[in-house]
Amino acid sequence: KAKSEGRSTYHFFETGMDAELQQRRSIEAGLRLAMQREELRLMFQPLLGLAEGRITCVEALLRWDHDERTVSPAEFIPVAEETGLIVPIGEWVLHEACRAAAAWPEEVRVAVNLSPVQFRHKDLVGQVRSALAATGLAPTRLELEITESLLLTDSESTIAALHALRAMGVRISMDDFGTGYSSLSYLRSFPFDKIKIDRTFMRDLTTRGDSQAIIRAVIGLAQALGMATTAEGVETEEQLAMVRDHGVSEVQGFLFSPPLKPRALANLLNSGRMRGQARKKAS
Ligand code: C2E
Ligand code: MG
Ligand code: MG
Ligand code: MG
Image 1 (cartoon, rainbow, N blue to C red):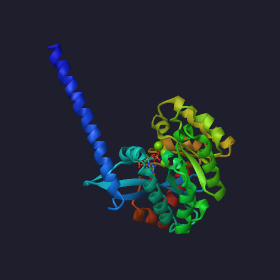
Image 2: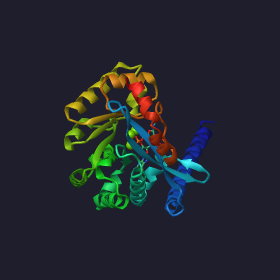
Image 3: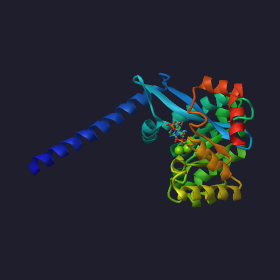
């Protein structure tokens, strides 16, 4: 009996692996066609500046409409990175995000996520320069979000690229801060403009004293280093009150707005609705 159970377990496992591999292959094949079929699009999520009492920045988030569903970036970005497809896709994202932002009020910046794989491509700086030139967006209105994993590999050329981007006037943010292994040492490797505190810290902020202490310390550290901070994943009034008390510069999360379609975001920016709401909530 034990033997047959073992066998069926093994069989089940094998089928599971197969399905996963098949899934990756189908994502890869689909992604190659996604660009020419115009299945990729951007959603935009506002970040609220608490001192400013308005939307200071908007993050571009990639979506893929494929086979009658919307595939999440968590599913296809890793495949795009493995296959190198992230390079042309990332270039499209940069261009599209800058194009959208050029039509927004001047005081609103746009944030674009960059994959470490894009940094391995020699001409990332040139790609950013082209996107800005083609869309007429001022470099100071562009923020590039990178994760800690970027600095794990190839750090000399990566740091050089970051400095070149910075010299153009582009801002550099560290995304998902606190989820990597030696987060603190990364803060010495490059003078980031902004630290985005990962939303896992927000999740148990109101129930765990240690998360609160960590957030307070990160904000204090950022302030001492002259870096702004964003709290990601703010979903409740309680979380907002806490991060505001600790002096966070910006908040992003479902409490204010989920990622929006380009038209809805443009309407929001023009209506000034978020402005009043932010003032009320911030005061
Ligand atoms: P991220 O850069 O940390 O983006 C924030 C993610 O948190 C987004 O997920 C957003 O929808 C989600 N989020 C925002 N507010 C809340 C909240 O209050 N609660 C919860 N539970 N979630 C919230 P999304 O759009 O699924 O993107 C996931 C990740 O995919 C991003 O994380 C980013 O690392 C990556 N990504 C998205 N677009 C791009 C892109 O154009 N290029 C690259 N390389 N990566 C991208
Ligand atoms: Mg991001
Ligand atoms: Mg993030
Ligand atoms: Mg995150």
